[in-house]
Image (cartoon, rainbow, N blue to C red; front, side):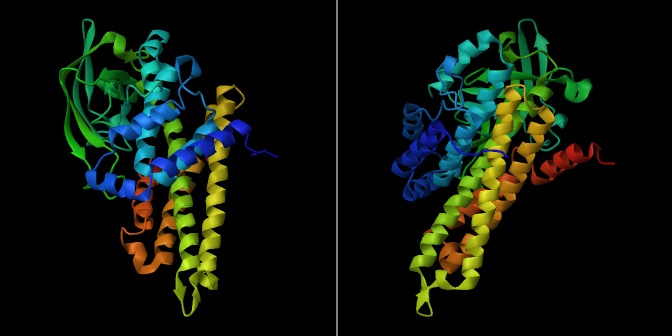
Length: 394
């Protein structure tokens, strides 16, 4: 039997993050951030001071070095407060930071990780393009070697933190004729000549309205050879590995959004009266709450199991396939569960749930993207089916 009893450190991380959210991320704050289309700089500074920005970074580079379950707990609590902010932190750590942790050279780690762990520099991760999402290997961005530099040309789309990041991990084809085997990975610094933020998506998004999302353009952008991460042609393998970390963070965030919607519903049904008594006393409402509770608990356990397998994989006690399968199960179930819980929360709130005076409409808007970014629900189903059957689709 798997023991999911939390350690003292894991409980401390959960409680610390919960206290931080209660103190610094109020519903009124989030509504204001959504209207503004971004987070204030001071919230990042506060998270850096609390160690949240460096939570997933190795201790030897100034991070907290949290284990995967502790990080999932932290992610869940952040998502309860603001999923937009959770997205920014996850991209910084789970995608950009993880790329460097596992694939950068020791010299590169020493150059970039300490400032990122301390929150002095923010990271982004650029794989998706205007014409390639799930088919990421169909990217058209190129990187041509020219002496001691690579010349990048192309665009990346829907890049979280893209407009505010100091370091952007960029995937480009160094050998356009080699398919996914011709993809390489680079770190591009903010301010590099030929690198430009050409569009920013803010209030025109359904959800995550305060998460800075941008389209990035590279026009004859010269990136030093020493900024290439890994060897040429290893970018695809690198990206797929890193996405497992990102997907685990997304799954934990889905649990957090659903938990917030559930708790808001519990409070509401105890106060709202109909026909002379609280609506929570009616069996049909109780049934909805019971279903929310069961599905949230199931999703949380899937997240913890995926996190446990991440630790086992790092220790050499779990295969990559087992870990990948556990992550896809968690992300798929948590994404679909979160959207359903938030939809039911709106139903419980009735007309009030249809306004921004109550947070459940925001929870639903933010939950929708969980089944789209970092691997759609359909992609997760393909991964799971191929893993359990050993067959690829016809």
